[in-house]
Length: 214
Image (cartoon, rainbow, N blue to C red; front, side, top):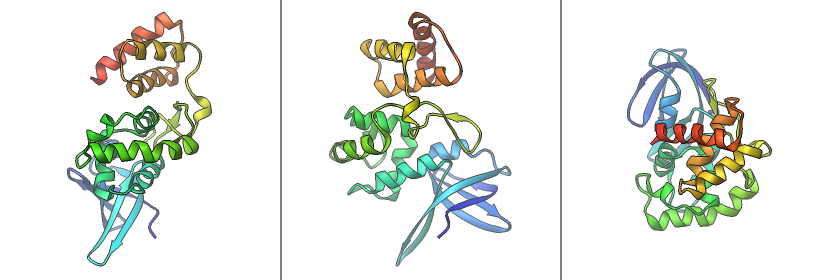
């Protein structure tokens, strides 16, 4: 079993990358978020991997972070979610967005992915709610470290969730009509960047962050 590959990025496509590992070229299917994170052709990168073996197919799937790999396993454990659909979901929603969507029963997040209709989206949020709450908790985590060195939102450190003025600012923005997962991501970003201040000072910064993501 291939658990992880490190090598030079040889080429990429819409949903795949080829990694040159000491002269052996591995073709891996990847989400668009992983492709955005692993860098440019010619650079060294590391991908965590999953292998699918069937009579007519042997395929490798690559992930920039173990967190994304873990969510891939969670998603593909739901009936009707194959490898292709799992990658499609990972391409439109980050782990923190999926966590928030499942806890809030927000099916729209999943219907944004190719191959996910309303029925499958409903099955995802219903079947995964208890599992995700038990595994990651009911608090949106804040700080983690991606393989590229960029700061990312982590779902495995729920104890470091939003609190104080950040939680109050997030609640205020949700009450204004902003989607919970977008608000949590924006406010968590501000917290991990070291911003401080009152609720009144945090809210404009979060609104600016939300505007950039729109």
